[in-house]
Image 1 (cartoon, protein in one colour):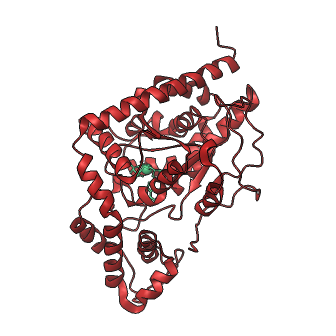
Image 2 (cartoon, rainbow, N blue to C red; image 1 turned 45 degrees about the vertical axis):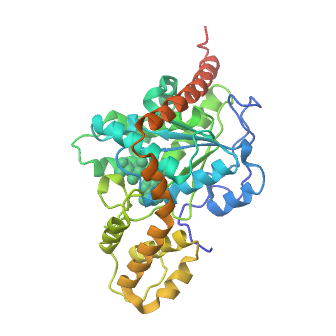
Image 3 (cartoon, rainbow, N blue to C red; image 1 turned 180 degrees about the horizontal axis):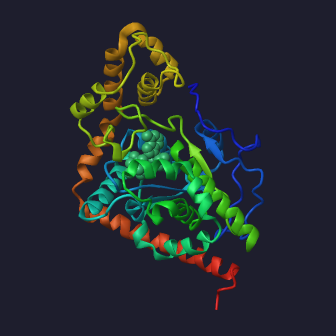
Length: 378
Ligand code: ATP
Ligand code: MG
């Protein structure tokens, strides 16, 4: 497939091989990082996975603020499953503490967190091979935030474009200190397990840059310890929702993974398009139409230009019919699996508890390395 991924140019044109592992995995010294690009595309990942993925460590996650949607699936979840199946060491975080960056948590948070785990399993993540855990259950991870916060300035955090956008959409009168420091918390999430690769949507690239900066500064100030992780950007780095803005749990503009076929049809019917009846794939000039074309193409495993040509002058209604069929067809097995496990609260909680045990062991080992590097191991 030839899909244009509109992401910033990597900071070098170097070959994108994975660095040797660092931190509490052998060898113990972090590699020189200056030449490693900040992100990897799906095509580059595919080339990498021809080799051995077992030395890749992956961290990624989602906030339990609502039901996972097609943006998560195409932007990150599919690649997580691919990496897991290729043998990568996968950590998946239910980022519950980050719920309170822009809203209150409560009883609904538990339901959302368990719902996330159900979605993960339905998509093909396997708790026997992937460590699925929640922030709040791993104190050592959160303690890492303290030394890492000392490595960035308030001005740097205030300039972060994703923080600005999320603060604006939160609709709260004041920016919480947790929202401001969210990217550093995310650095702790990624660095606690010395992840090499972080499958994320495009909105997360500025945050990942903070992680890379923090890792670099720690390595320079104390000792080489952390790998500078790279983002893995999918062929759909920013799926748009029904209103033409980024599909987001908080905007109510999503195609939920768990939705029924009829609900999916109703949501897609309401998607914003444009008046030109001739369907083309041109994300720059026709973002809404191209978004539906891309969704259709990725669900069918086809090239988006081919999908657009097939529909031709059929107009938005035909495009929406194709998109609905493609999404419902592609998600059918996932939805069936989800229906079987969604009510199994003990199973889903048990997965989070076991994941927290492994994540805690990792986080404590990393925290000890950090204390030693900082002269605080007594
Ligand atoms: P919220 O509105 O609560 O922020 P969200 O829908 O933005 O929810 P997150 O939990 O913030 O979802 O994001 C989890 C992961 O999914 C991140 O890596 C993010 O980049 C990715 N992601 C979220 N929305 C999209 C999207 N529309 N397209 C591609 N990737 C996405
Ligand atoms: Mg978000």
